[in-house]
Image (cartoon, rainbow, N blue to C red; front, side):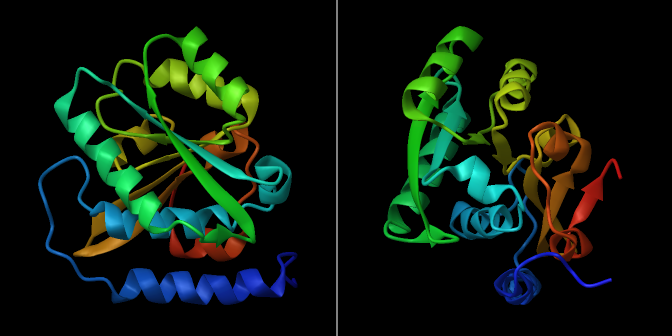
Length: 199
């Protein structure tokens, strides 16, 4: 069967596969084994495989980096993600500009208010959100917000997309039921090179 995805996505699949296969990194024991400067570009490329991307992005890819201000590792990880996104200023995903905000998680109501005010359509879930994860995912699924993370355990718990280490190389993780619940439809070219949970 011929793929329904655009030809440029098939080329992008080869680029992403090459990028992931070429990276060989020493494994680390912490919750995020892949450094931010490698993790963020991979996750940005993954978003391009969502067949609903144009509808969900609606002219701008607006990322809310959710963190716990009382957790030092959460704040540090958020700064690293922000710094990496700042360095990518001017870059686009499928010709859509990228914006980002840091969001201190306090209550579900305040998070939802921020999402509405800033038109956030992607959540990056930083470490330190173990307790708040159910509320974050409830909102992401209700509003069709794609969730990303560098914490593999969060993908098992319902975040749609993450990056981990496998055989000393970055490996894309996709929680397929969660992705579908958030309104995403990832292309088969991506699913073939990712570790997919919940097929």
